[in-house]
Image (cartoon, rainbow, N blue to C red; front, side, top):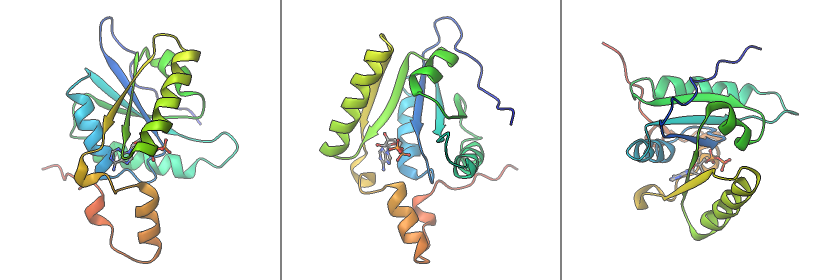
Length: 163
Ligand code: ADP
């Protein structure tokens, strides 16, 4: 399949990648995206996909993210099945954006940040603390509730209808 990638960073443009599974993309992710856009010139959401598995989940996530962020200028999205550090090289992004909902999340994120800085010197990770009201929210929780037939609409960004 041919993949489209966002425009590479222009000289001096501060581009951050926001990598994750986004299965599904929640209002917690949207909050990190919007806060990231207050810091960076452009944020590219990178939907991770595993080389050894069918990529249908990632393709669906990408499609939903494109729809849900269509009205947000400076937000881009792409799918990637390699190292995030290589996606950063491809796009010229010098920053990674991540969220941390808890101390456990933060330890994990810090470790990832250290590894990414080791394999790609100069690649900085910015970890934003989750907004307290959204800290309990995770994609896996949304999937779980949904599997029991619970209406999870309140946890998902609303569709903007164009007029
Ligand atoms: P991953 O599989 O890489 O953890 P996720 O899609 O679950 O990917 O999450 C992507 C990023 O968004 C992670 O940094 C995660 O901590 C953050 N995140 C997820 N849910 C929330 C939330 N409710 N508030 C803030 N950050 C969040």
